[in-house]
Image 1 (spheres, one colour):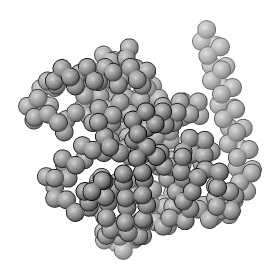
Image 2 (tube, rainbow, N blue to C red):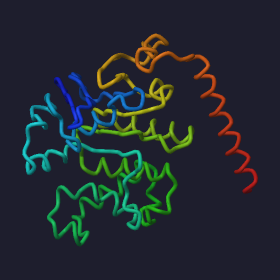
Image 3 (cartoon, helix red, strand yellow):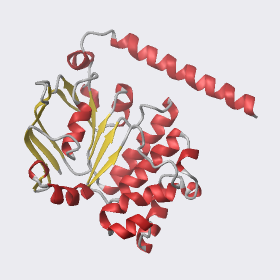
Length: 273
């Protein structure tokens, strides 16, 4: 279980990115984090694993306060947190298998990692994970030969290779088309359910969040202004999070854009046949 208590971040410029965020994410819950640009969503995720240093507050993963750890112990505790990035963060020249095995770097010696000599059990586990994300046949392909959706699946498998107790997911669908976005979100939610993994997903697509998240937290100007189930995300709640907008028109526009993109892909596939 993850508990944030009064988590705050103020930069040296005086800008406040997070202000006293208090949340609990229980085992197995997948929580969507929404809000306008600059609301503090990515900062919150990065404060949890201390890619950004919090200014105040607690970050409790189980009974360990990650915000109070020294560098050496922090490196060890980070193994408990799987991170999935918007930009994938794969090593393009390495194979899919090598990228997945990089999730085990925190568990092997320097020379094993340098020589990419991983234990047999880690290699077997990596094959199982690639099978689970539907990429077993791509194990020997270079990462730069994959599509965006395939790269995101490799990122998921790499995070799972850590055997994490928590997943942090930063804009996993921002660079993907609507169909692939739904596939990735479905895969994430299934994996979290299978493993009882809690997850925080920073997501810009509100309809996608409503479809797949168990709980939604809305940030505005670094503060939590909404926390509840997807069905409670009314127009009034969306206005509180994002400001005034014609939400019905926006939803209709999103649907029309998705239909247009699907039609364009169908035409391209027909031309390729």
